[in-house]
Amino acid sequence: MRLLLVSDLHYTLKQLDWVVARADDYDVVVLAGDHLDAGSFVEPDVQIVVVLEYLARLATKATVIASSGNHDLNARNDHGEKSAVWLQRARELGVHTDGARVERDDAIVTVCEWWDGPRSRGAVDEQLRVDAEKVDDRPWIWVYHAPPDESPTSWTGTRHYGDADLRAWIAEHQPDLVLCGHVHESPFKTEGGWFDRIGATTVLNAGRQRGPLPAHVVVDTADGALTWISLAGVEHASLAPVA
Image 1 (tube, rainbow, N blue to C red):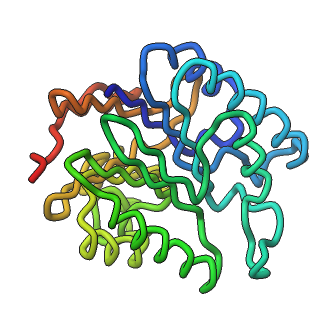
Image 2: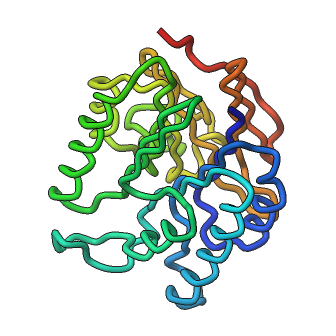
């Protein structure tokens, strides 16, 4: 499987254009949250319509996975907690979103929401527990907007800004690969990074940069090759061997 990871596009239309133009080169395209930009002068409802159109176009080219991020929260869920309710409309377009388990011949992918309270956190906890029972010899991949705490992938340059719950879930379930975003600066900072290994789990955060080219990671599960491409250059790493 060839997989493209981007995140934190924040309604940057030229970057979305780039992803659509190159989606044919990949089996799976992952957009790991923050599709919208809460600070934009464009109204959120307008951003949602446009992003859904892009997701529809992507879904004609590859398996598309889009998780929510903190900028994507637009309403309250049944628990009364903030949620990216609009993103569920992408399911009708063939996009795999929050709460989904994607079972392919070459991988199992768990798509986690950006949780904003204890009930939603509990739902993610239960989702991971249930999906763990489905794991077999295929790689288990998580899409989760925030990176784990105390990781190079969560380093801002001055402090870690990651998710302690995610780190605990990684220790408990030991997925093969976790695809993140949220902390834009990590790959570009000393002591930060786009790549980390926590036990047997590989963690990736492509970061965010300005301009028409999104920082991105290419994952090839056939040979375990990882490639990070950004304005800072090209770097390579490898997936942890599957036990």
